[in-house]
Length: 344
Image (cartoon, rainbow, N blue to C red; front, side, top):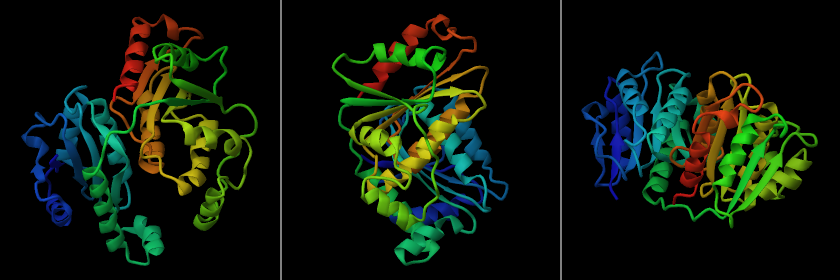
């Protein structure tokens, strides 16, 4: 299948295209999104975004607007992305917005789909040191590796086992009420495991050195040990799909969920999660569920390498205790999400 590169044009896009061209498969197509995004369904895509000195791209924003207006425009697509900046900020932010919008429009994303380059390339210093090379070479190697995975991508195996992580109280949680509705729509023969991260002590990451983290990961553990190593690590290894159950109180993931994501680093050092799907259920008291969805994308898809299926996140708003189950059509919405979770 040919690769289509979506490259919004601006004064810096030609420089990015020059970098990409020698690395692209011979039958790749370069497309300016301003010419339209129709007819892309089912294709492999590479979003290529060059930001200006302010960390913006006017043509990129026009593409974002188009994606946000559709839920079906990129149905059946799988993608990666390369983002370059002139300064040190906004590359990850722009990438996160783009992935969320494209995913809502039906596009799936590889695990670790992003290669970003800040203006100084300092974000590639660690990779350069590990590889015994310079930052420019490390950047080019990362792009080549992403394109290789995108070209060779195959659909993950069917889901046999689901792991749901949460940090909520069952008696009062609208988030868990939503999960119960979704779970009821899953096949009866599917293995489902739930872990509550409120139980026991969930210490956050200690910030070990790369080599120390790698050492503990190779031993199947982590510096702190505890329930994260004893319970969560084996469950993550076993699952085909991870469902993050996220109550939105302050426009951010709960502390225990954040600690869990951070502590997955030692396990990630040992193995990648490219074949494990990531899903999210986010219930907000007022608004801002999309902020948590973006956190899940950057933390678990971009960093920890979980595969992002299309429409990965179900976002709802419910404030008062028990009000979630009274939302109009919520049972049908939850059942539809469960069906989409199981779609190959």
